[in-house]
Each structure stands twice: as C-alpha cells, then as structure tokens.
Image (cartoon, rainbow, N blue to C red; front, side, top):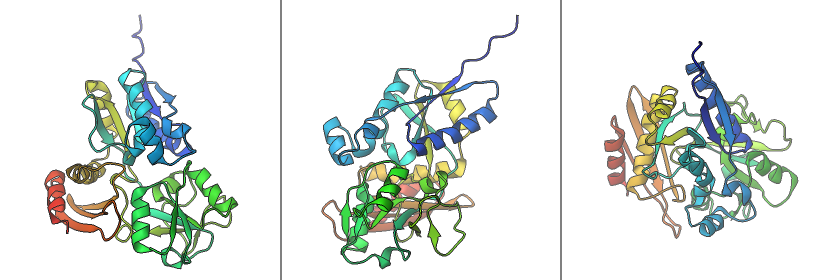
Length: 318
C-alpha cells in the first residue's frame, strides 16, 4: 500500500488585504521548500479587525491588552489550540516578549522599512501647510510628526491600507496620512523602487507619496518584516518556519526587538529604531520619545552580535 500523505501545514493569518498578501508569500515559500505537504490557510478575524470605530488605544483598554495586541490575540488562541501551525504576522504587531508557550521562529526577507507620507499635493513633509490634519493610528508616527512639525494636527485613522487611502482621497477629514512603505509596495500601490521624482498612488488618482528617509523619520522595530510564530513545543513547525527564514533580516530584527525589550517597550511605545547590515556588521539607530512629548533621546551603535549591540545602543541614549 502507498504511504499516506503527510499532514498539511496549517497557516493562520488576519483577513486584511495586506495580511493575505503576506500569507500568500509565506505559503509560496513553504510550498517550494516542502512540495509534499499541502498548505492550508485559516483566516482569523481579530478584535482589531472588528473594532475600527475607535482608536487602537481604546480597543486595547477594553480588551486589557497592549495597543496592537488586538491584532494577534485570536491568532495566538488558534495557535494555542492547534488549529494552526504557523501564525503569519506583520512583525511590528508582535510584542517584544512573547508568552512562554509561543516563539518567533523566523522572519522572511525584509521589505522597505520606511514610513510614507501620502498627500493630495506633492511636496513632502515640509510642504504640509500649517494646521494640516495628518492621519495615523501609530503613537510613534504621531510623536515624530509632532516633533518635526509641531504646527500640524494629528488625527486618529483606522482601517486597512486601501480604506485609509480612500479616506484621504474621498473626504476632507485629512490633508495627509502616514503609512508603511512596505504595505504600499506589497499591495502594488507603489513600486519597490521609486521610478519618478514625484510618485503617485497607483489606482487612486490625486494622491502623492513621499518615502520618508529612515534616518529622518525613524520606523518601528521590525517594520517591513513578516514574522512566523509557532508553538514553543512544536519542533516540526519550527523547522518549517526556519527553513524559509532570512538570516540577515533575523539579525537586524533581533537587535531592534532586543533594544525594545531593554526599554521595556512594545508596540505601543513611541520609539523609532532602524538598522542596516553589511558583511555581517549591523548599524543600529534609535529615537525614544517621552510619553508627554518633547525632545526625544537618541543613540546609535555598531557591532556583529545583535544582543550586545542592542545593549550598547541602550546605553548610548542621550
């Protein structure tokens, strides 16, 4: 008798357009690495997906969790229950320290890490008029914008990427919005590499994009990376995840997330951190904002071991 087929790999994801694109990329890599295994997707609706009527902070308070924990709670419950084997996340949605029964097993090759400013007129950050209304749900983006442009007004903005773009294009509620460059690239709204000095959003007329240099507008730890979470006791799923992981991205995000851990920070902390790696040497930069606003502390460090590097960066803050 022929051998029975091995069990499938069960992949869990949120249902937003961006989450599904990230799940598709993960599944393609798994299918290539393990062609004998069927890949089955489970789409899980999270609290954050259901509650788009109020700010992330208010949703988190009602759920008794941190801000972006509302995007992973139900996925981790499915992972815990064995309903999925690998959870696919936007890495910046994951807390710095996971519960003991879960582990971040791997990350895929990183997309661009920058933030992007989308406006109705080209020009970028300094072209925003005094009193411009800028939409974001990120405390980090809000704090940086208030620091760089204290004359603008920050307004809460919820919804997935296409929804946020339509809100900007179709109403006068916002003059500009802030989004991750990685999401815009993965959804096909902009190319991976800029092809023109003035860029427009593909498919939505009248919206212009400025990719903000990470050295000026610091991104979130893990921004642009897709994280693969598994049960700590599930060694086989960990092998699956690790086999499609990207080593340089892993070194960079390990340094970034360890720095956040040393700060005792998480997804809700107003801190920007970015890294670069060349020939195994990592450069790490950070900007940490006080909760009450004002001038941030900043620092930088260079090294090869991500944990030592994160500690050096932490100690360099001034």
